[in-house]
Length: 379
Image 1 (cartoon, rainbow, N blue to C red):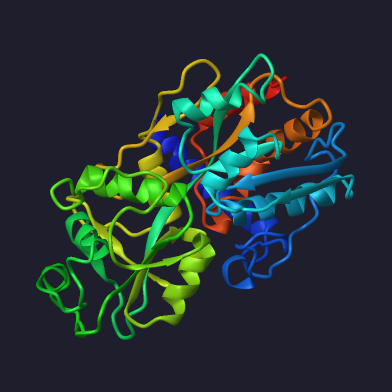
Image 2 (cartoon, rainbow, N blue to C red):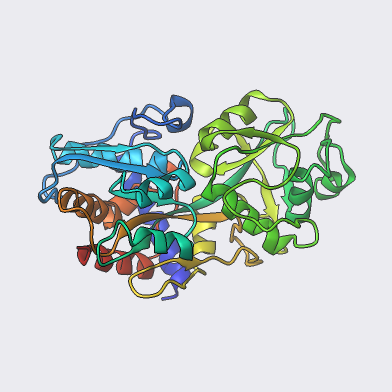
């Protein structure tokens, strides 16, 4: 069976299992700018079956920070894990953004961090000060589409391509009735409304992956080098995925990029990739693209290389994979049992099964299997 077929089967199974485990969109009220009812929902969860989660020696408090894109997934996992472990461990995940999370980790402030981009060589080198006799590694844990959400009353089913998106976010296309948008949407009644393009104000792995897509798919129209910080001129900024989502929701004519779980109540763009039909931002379509990823990390590092330029049918090209950043060796003894217990759960079949219902894509079997092996060997 091919990796893509396995991933599709896993996604369908995850949708079923996730529906049983989660009622509505899960969110846990926690500190951090992204913990809002608008982005996470108010549904509850079913208490896990006894034995479904191995709490091990997990106890006390576990601090973590990083990717806001994965925060709704982390909140869902924390809710299940805490219920199973009867409150013995308190997990506090801030979701301040990938850049802030890696900084907190390399300064020894958190047990693990979430990042939507793999560690840079200089960040790995910096981590050796914290990871005694070891270094930080990337563990891919959460996948999903970066949705392009827009607020244009009366216009549904909007289609855009990479060059048009690049020009919109580079302030080269400024109104919704621009000829380039009309060409992609010949049957839509597009107004002359001014485009309000929102990007992240904080360092963000979501920005990094979104601009990697523009660099790969529209090199003639996106001349910036990319990275976690927004580089194009113009547009408007908002903090965190929830901040962008809120601004798009309340601003007519707005457009912005965010992880799919933050766009549940919004209208999203389908992407013309050169495939037989435009591709919608869905969990399954993102899984089809992630299945084409390659492991490029060395040693215990499992960093992935994504194919942003895919033209395969039903493969949504603007995807991200969020990594949990942790020491391979040299983790603090007082937090290592809790870190391993929680990471083992979220990498487990039950943990991954929660993702699709919350708007995320499970990591393909071959990759998540390597993640589980690596977590078992953390020291």
